[in-house]
Image 1 (tube, rainbow, N blue to C red):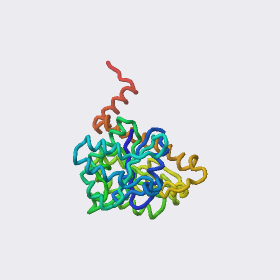
Image 2: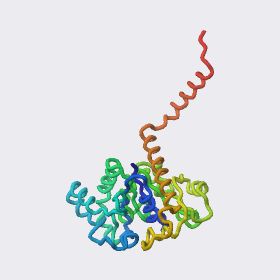
Image 3: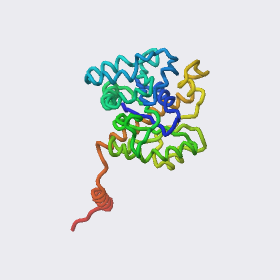
Image 4: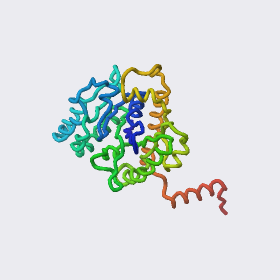
Length: 290
């Protein structure tokens, strides 16, 4: 199953989107709230029911002890988002000042998340928050860069507005370059469009020269509940957002699988492709001897 990191150029609904995908997945799922600016789900959707004794920050000390300690700490700091326990959450930071302590923890956490995806069969989503750049590179403290580098897919959440596209244009080249030079490849980058604004998916993809992997409807009432908590809006379980989110999880999986296949079976070199084309032409035309 894929590990998908979600980011934004500015606040575009990354947390609500990540929650919608996690809750709508047809398989067991896990959301790691890894925004260095601090998590919001603990005080929002969970209504303060999970205290600061649980969550991401506590993995830093465990990682310094060793991989086994980190794995045990990770398992003990997961919260359930549903009664059956199929939807899990690693709550985020309670204080942005804690982010510096996690710089050396991100690579080891990436390993754990891939184990959850590949061996435990979970759809894994990472809320990586807003991208922070420094001299055109991903900021080492304010962005969980190692998680992005290891992710199967990195989705930039955008809206169909001129403002959102203008902000995204500034970060797409740097993010694409970072994934090419230090990640799993520039083709890991895609867009997740929230249909708020006049621009449709094909226009957004063309404007940012990046494929739109999935589209979610603009649903402010449901999004507000996912981020702020309280009483769910009427018809929440059958809402358009969750229905489309389930489709989005399938589209993300297809894109991740396609990338994996392309990496295993890369396209033929141009000169070989030319040879194959000529052979095909000769075969179609019939080769005569004598």
